[in-house]
Length: 350
Image 1 (cartoon, rainbow, N blue to C red):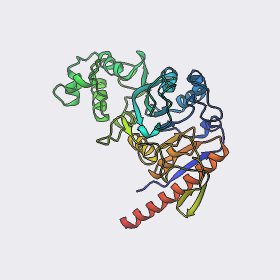
Image 2 (image 1 turned 90 degrees about the horizontal axis):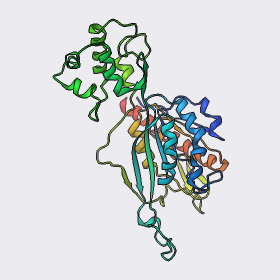
Image 3 (image 1 turned 120 degrees about the horizontal axis):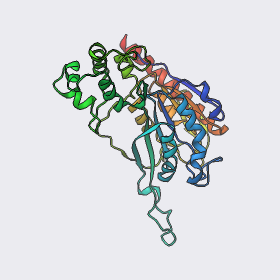
């Protein structure tokens, strides 16, 4: 069944909205770059960490263990904020590079004054929440916890294979402490927990328990790991010129038909509008229909427009009144299109 489209647009400072928004499955940040790109942006990367600090603290407070973060910026801007993200419990996964191509700078470089290679890239850093477990051994990372709980039960490591019904995969994958460690699927996690609590030493804190009351279930365990919907053929380098087609908004937005928008003539409405294709890609990778998407710095709300089109629930804020108006137009149209698609699918099913 198709998820009904939903979005909530906050017209103002996102710091006033965070506490009202539900727990995010993913946060897509496209805020200050340290290039004076908008009123309130910093004049250089040196001030970016402090600019982002209250936002990152709010994200960290609201996040679930399976929440992910995509952080758009320049290379040096991202590098400047990375330590703050780590400090607040975010683990780096990988860096996406947007290669905009030579057309991005063609004719705009003075070869007599430039003293570096022209920049044609932007980056989007992918993070997950650092998962640590509290228990009788203190607060420890999940990989260390998996082995420590088995040892706490006093059971030989190789009997984890018997617990999981495999020859040697459980010890080699789920209890190892090296880089070959695998996050155990919920089914295997539940088998390990059942075996440890049946055959382990008597304890007041159940083995493989997150709350000290009972062992974790397969369903609970699987929800602690972020979703990943893999698409073959896509790497961490995305090549596409900056928007110059009909997707690029110019001037103001007007309705040309009930479900169609066309920009009026004039300069680009936003200096750094992201392609919907990219936003759909990152949302599709880490969420399922009905999941909550946060876009704290909306601009034209490209991430939220993509989220609505994909059947996710979008929560977006924008402080600039004109951008907010344009964002509302785009979201309204995306919602109507999604409604129409849902109706067509329902009729097809019937």
